[in-house]
Image (cartoon, rainbow, N blue to C red; front, side, top):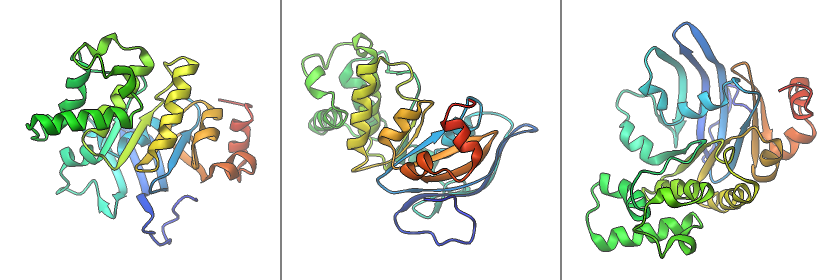
Length: 262
């Protein structure tokens, strides 16, 4: 895997292709000429020091920045060859296709069942048997069913932090996305919960394309297929994880991975 240079061919297995992406908050440029591909059904980790642009980049992939004032985005982001910043892109449908899990679990103050059923209901599903099936399938997909099947109608806020994060993943799976974006999904969790999320993510890549922001070098090396290193809003390099961690092309990458800064 390498950063897209502008003269390459878009391959069918590349789920997401980003070309020459710039992002500004007012006059402040937060992303500078970022070009990268994310292959289908694989995990791409985004690493770099705090404030380097990795979370900002992640949010460009489902247009989360549309919710903020004074943001200007230039360049191209294509998912399955579709320009997601095209004026005729349905943003609601885009966010159904490209879901996001945040740093801290954010379950709704509803039952476990209603948390997972929420998305399908919003998209028009009213049949009780289909909602029951979707909730069970999604909780199984998030490796949570066995832990919550006897408390489906109790508040999701009573779950542990790790369970809440897996519930948030189940909530995404219920609307049948294609891409899962995860912004430091384990940073607020204990080591055992972190391990369960990591195990889950490696299973989910069999069906989904996954992008994950992490500060944890060991986590990136353990679970990702590809890794991209950001610094000061620039993509310094991107490559297969094994290559980037053992033979980085740029000294700045080597210095960051070895702990010389960050």
